[in-house]
Image 1 (cartoon, rainbow, N blue to C red):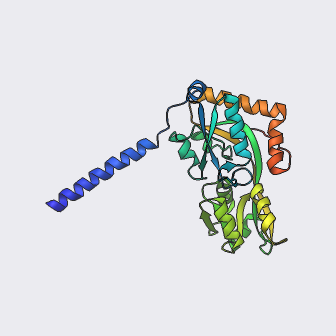
Image 2: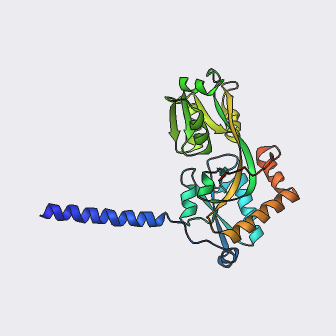
Image 3: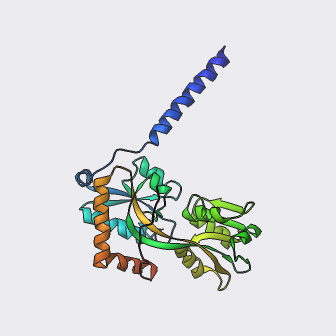
Length: 272
């Protein structure tokens, strides 16, 4: 009898915890520009493991291209920027549960993500490539099956690489880009799916000629992400991005961190 009651109580407790967990995943109430101005702080999620878009500086603070954009956006709204470090897998949950007001987190604009979040007009863009040991011969997707492939879990490169990899390809998924890069450098994987800025960082430290680019998986543009329903705030964010483009400030910030001009920032067709 006691055992039965204990099991019943345990199940009831698990049910309650599950309900709380599901409630925590519901999108938070939409915020307006006026609400944020009244609070005086804009909470912005960004990556710190995706140089030069997101890094941690010598003072232990978030920095990089995205951090500069986030701070400029907060300044444009007349509030203080509170930069919150997120990871690739948790950045959208952080947004949807209200832990941040928006994401300036190198989030590629895709149809799948647009089902969860509202994207601004593009503010940056990069290429996603297959990159790895020079000795690895990868001329077409079928060649991926010959090697161990590393990728950051749930990232755009994960989705893009998984879409073309033949059945049976040994894909190892890591928590972030830094872990995937370390796996490549240490020989745990032969090749990785990576964004061109990450490739640039690898080539700064790797022996010359040790690695090269194999295939281009996709070209992507990044958008600032908000919760669905934050229409007022989205309008202000879009106005900020367009103003930064028109003044040349956005390109100047891009050149500061990537030493090249912004690519064409065309909003992709997301379909129905």
